[in-house]
Length: 418
Ligand code: BGC
Ligand code: CA
Image (cartoon, rainbow, N blue to C red):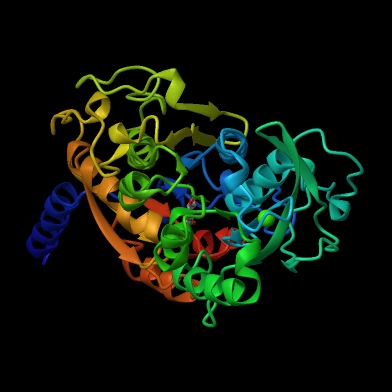
């Protein structure tokens, strides 16, 4: 009997040595990316989620800097034009605005940035604002149709083009959400422009979109042929290529930097090394990010990539949005960084930016960082379905990268780890 007991014990000990000891799920690294844990009404950061454990971070980009840049890019373009910009000669430069998701910080910032730059912004009364110091103070509500300039959430602005002063009017804006509930929906934008054009097409002089997915849907459906300046955001490859055909500009949110940071922070947290290795300081393979590409806010544990404008002047160097960046594309050795399994979700399998640009960028860097990533995706609306997928894999992987459907829903994921 004793002998069997000893044999059994020995077997258990061998097993214990052979099997890697995984941390408890709630001690594993958690990286939120692209959709920042925050209150979708107020934008306030969800610090409970961001401090879930000491290996929790957010990776995104500077929404405000990008939104200001987009506004500037649009105004610079318009100021360089002549009287032909006012297509119907009514003295009004009319624009339509595609809003991605009314409860998403990135979308809110872009609506604010465009309105502030175009002079159509009013202070955000729901936040108790009475004046506009920065774009954060701007009302970001959609207005529906405003061809008569009477909408409550915007005002008419002014712009001088070729020595003539014009009124600037937001003719229409709406959240582009499909009937099933998916936001930033390109198909909805493509349909909506048809309705707007039928209604007041001759008044539309400019199209502004919170992203390229919606912007390109409109460009292809109407504005390319109509010759109406159209602006987006993301610098997806198809949008950058379209600059050669008259798409007027987009903003690169440096998806390469974000994808690398998403996986890099996971890698560093898994290895228990300083979180800035391979980020602010080179790693053993020479990977490093220069300061002009990102910043880190230690207090909120958030990494932000910076944005750059992509226009007719520089688009040729942005044509491949999926190319890896040679400055941080060096293979880690397996001795330093043994292969680890991690889980990552893309919240919407049809989101243009995430699937055409971000996901290929993640796949550039997973291998060099020796991460064996289980990629899953959702349908853009059903958070429960993604959480179920997390539940299925939660014990088998060593870290999680989470792209939420709703930015208020971090607890739905972290509760699976408890
Ligand atoms: C991108 C959008 C995208 C969204 C998804 C944003 O940062 O600009 O194109 O739809 O992320 O969360
Ligand atoms: Ca006009």
